[in-house]
Image 1: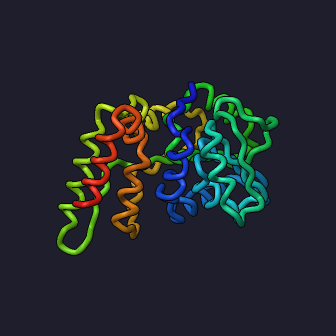
Image 2: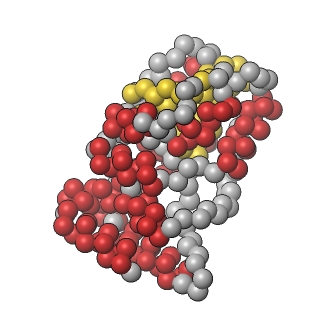
Length: 242
């Protein structure tokens, strides 16, 4: 089943502007693993649930071609609007029905997206389209952000956590169990040489405005905004003012 939570044009624009790019450290781990399994050239990487293309762009310089797949045309429009990546193409579609021949893909990735996919059908498609010794990398973000700024880091983190608590009634089941779904998916992967890295601590500099924009990009905030637009706008402004 493909879940459709990121399809509105306004949401796609916010997603493009404020969502984190996966850090280069994670890209390097993926590429090092791929190099151990498969010799160059690396012709094709496919980014599943690519959204607005943050992860696709991170891979672009390391593959002859990158294809981003997403169900949301609005997300793909935002991705296509980013210039300077001539070897990336974006196609509307699902992770469970991939438009590639058997044994044609060097790397499949999904960044904060695999929990939305049908596990059994995804793994069948991965087994079909991957080349011999091709690889699949599934990424997730732990929900334990800590904000640091001078002496008010704890206060900022509390504000962030309070914002999320307001959104709990609007959190989809798939999102609430995202990390559990990733663990289940890892357990179901049939490849004998699979590896799991439980935690990769990362630091990133970000402005307060961009943190609030990131919060606005949450699917549960967008659900709140659809249900109670005035209350959602007031929550966002109140959070920014604090």
